[in-house]
Image 1: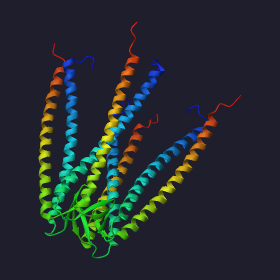
Image 2: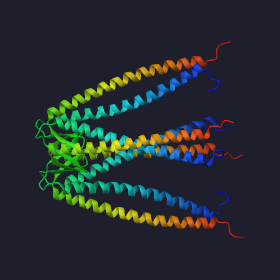
Image 3: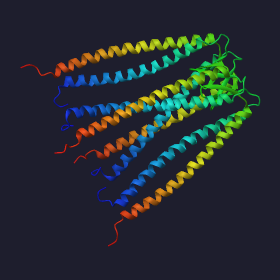
Amino acid sequence: MQNIPPQVQSMLAQLESYQGQLQLLVQQKQKVQVELNEAKKALEELEKVEEGTVIYKTVGTLIVKTDKEKALAELKEKVETLEVRLNALERQEKKLNEKLKELTAKIQAALRPTAG
Amino acid sequence: MQNIPPQVQSMLAQLESYQGQLQLLVQQKQKVQVELNEAKKALEELEKVEEGTVIYKTVGTLIVKTDKEKALAELKEKVETLEVRLNALERQEKKLNEKLKELTAKIQAALRPTAG
Amino acid sequence: MQNIPPQVQSMLAQLESYQGQLQLLVQQKQKVQVELNEAKKALEELEKVEEGTVIYKTVGTLIVKTDKEKALAELKEKVETLEVRLNALERQEKKLNEKLKELTAKIQAALRPTAG
Amino acid sequence: MQNIPPQVQSMLAQLESYQGQLQLLVQQKQKVQVELNEAKKALEELEKVEEGTVIYKTVGTLIVKTDKEKALAELKEKVETLEVRLNALERQEKKLNEKLKELTAKIQAALRPTAG
């Protein structure tokens, strides 16, 4: 790093920070995506269940009786919440990718040998 | 890599790609095999259950009442699906192993010092 | 380490040991914190459940019928136990951090070049 | 390794192989120990359950009605099986440790400079 001008060094540090944030975002997105897929699959299966079927839900290590209507309402709310969170994460990812692209261009320009 | 002829370099890159694919296939096969063993074990236990026993199935974090007949049908279908997937993965693995063997032979032939 | 006086070397070894203990403590604390959050969330959900609702609890791979009153009592006890453990871990962490601070100061003093 | 006599090299390779086996054994032992502790804890809790309490057991992703007597019998058998396996693993570990000790002594003797 010795021959790199200080302002470029600071941009490189910023770049690394953005890349770390992006990696974290991508991990969070994958986690929410997995949860969302599971919730949607459960919703689909639950909709096929006959009215009046005995249904329980897990509450930590407890199992509590519920019914199809309540279970459907809770699952739908969960799906919505997860979709909102996923959209927020995707917007953040897009913005961060744009910042990364701009910063990379700036760094390349700063490091480009200036025409004599 | 400098003294290796370009066509051999390209074969070595292909070899590495095959090895990566093979590793992935083996991991997928193991995952399906574990799921299949669990499903078969559950099927075996379920078959021993008396007719009329109360049975529930898990649907995500919900628990939904079912009966022995339905549960057996679903488990048998799951076992079949997993067996089909396992067979497909095994065929892919076999083909990939053959390709790897052929390519390794080609590379060895290309690198063998030609008799003067 | 050759030019470091033996008593400083021994303090550095002690420092490393404290850091290892601290890392372990922090991991334990996080584990207890996660369990506590889950138990509190389950307690909150359970309190909203109507009296007389059928409730089961998991005992290893078994599921045993209980009732709201018993389940509440067990969950409250679990929350209390976890809070006691969390407090104990936090006290240990605080003490260890103080020891680390003191030892670091001692090491810095010992390594400081003495004024001629 | 160049100056190490071949028979010592072969003993060192054997030593490494023993160490690998030992590591594997210790991991298996820990896994069985964890399962055993869980089964014993479940057994203890189950014994406190009132006669006639509704009990289910998990069979893969299914939940099947059972009763206290059957569940107790199955858990006791599981505990016994795990204890037998744990004992076998501990015997293997002990034997392997003895072999390791003997081999280490042999290697040290072989590497000891012989008195002129």
